[in-house]
Image (tube, rainbow, N blue to C red; front, side, top):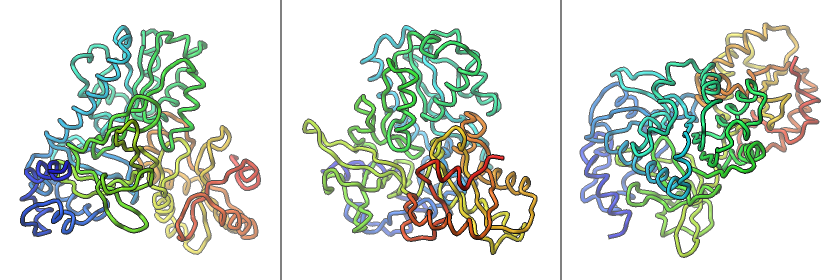
Length: 468
């Protein structure tokens, strides 16, 4: 029996009588029948079922009871919610534990000091039925292996009592006198924000504050690559290790141990398929071409089936091992500091105020500069001749962006790396000049109307953007 059929059998035991799966009239649950009848879906496809489960309806995806809701930044204008059961949490924890145990086995001096873990919140809010809704990083960091939990600084549940805008400053002050040997984080962005906080309260270099710091563990691939380079400059003698490919939906492989996001896929625990975006064929790992980019499609024991999580990967071969290599997130996502904002989230935030301020006929475009100390914010450029109360519009759009993207909110409030949205009003003539530039944009809008632009040089910023 192939590995895909084996893991499918385990998944089906939990969800064969679920209200979601019963829609597809599967008889024998062979891999072939499953792939023929169960569609490949995005979050919007299953959102009605998610909402039913979130409001307390049972047996939507699985016979197992939902214990907690993982939350991630959505691509459709609001956060995505993923249910987790006892079994899915146990599986995630087992994979996380294997990563940490491997890390400590290879670097035993870590346990001579303290381990600092920087993650999202354990609980952002409670569901209508009183279940925790939190970041998967915060949830899983509360389940650190008992073998070295005594070495970990601060319980994530206790940290949730600190407001987001004071979270990093509070942690920074407490850690200055600690003997930290390892820092683990769910985001390279969090690390940079934390280091900025340390610099603001200490005259010492970070390497001198924690001379025994040996390991930094965080995601290193995709949009984090530039930030990893910045961390390396701050701590040139510290080893940086990628955590592997984990998401709110599952932990799909543990890193091989370096900075590359590469690892042995967890085929015994997740049904992993790969979507060819050109042919639209969905393949198993063994059916793919090596070194070709595919979109990851996963089925999990909590009943989320054939789900496109928005990660692009390649199947590669090294030392006779078949590995998965993370390439990047969906091409429609953009980041200045890792916030993974989407074109839809940006444009929707403006749509909410257009009618209120009679701007429905005005041309507009969002500008997302590359990281620059003077331009570290999103801009909204509007072609406009009349005077408006821009302060109120900016505040309303800013609130929409924070409500729609938890990563954006964290980077604005917690790490403070991003400044608030800025609106620049220009004449129609100037706007037409901007549109000509936008025609060459990097956003990869795939033929759609271009409403977000990532300029490549500061000449553009100085010409069209102001921070006044």
